[in-house]
Length: 349
Image (cartoon, helix red, strand yellow):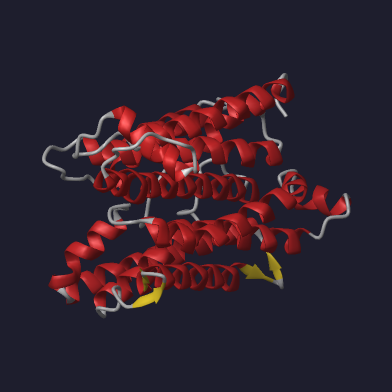
């Protein structure tokens, strides 16, 4: 942990936690339909079981709780999952520029979803109103991870150098297949492009319920294996000297991070840079110890995507929306360039 980082952990986590709760409430006030702040907060209070006054408009309650709050919660969870996955990928690959895209998992999810859109299967109901699209995306994410692991094994061992190269190869190949699907079916091009750019439009509590078990499972696995991730970050030789089975630990952490990424991409489409930006910012304050880094990065990533989604909903007039991936790319692109230049100069960002 960075000098003084342990003393900053509690206040920083408390600050981000309080900001997350306040932001979830504030996001319910934002939208094309004007609803008085007092009434919106009263609907939130009623949803939490608090006693509120009479005379609330039920239609406004649906907008506040079932549309805005559900979407805000999903945005926060998705951002938290991507940030935690980015923390793991950066630790495993010893590369501060690594994120869920580096290893091809996000592109695999995009390919699975594109297949569902291409064959017209996206609207088929699977669970509680959630269509086949998230399931196809999740399957694509794990198929890509399987391909990366198969390609990355050299002499029976999973080496980080070969994992990075295998991820680039798999991502490039699947990206070409997505382009092929778009070329073969002009009718599905718009849907595939919009999904690949990332969007939370039309998502609700059913999507939260679909993805939440995967978020919780992946998050708990990352926290439980954070000590092993600390040892892996020292290098394989030193980790083995300290008694760690590096291959087994790397595989377990890859599965946990891919579970988080697949769940996030399955409900939001491909949203870039959250897994890159949030761990970097938190590392500046806390250092590289992975358990506090993963937890606080999740809080920061949740906030980042929540407000990016609010901006995506509010920046255009007449209720039009930007893909949220465009907003995160506009924020993350300059940050990525800054990191690249600082590393080229030997800086520590």
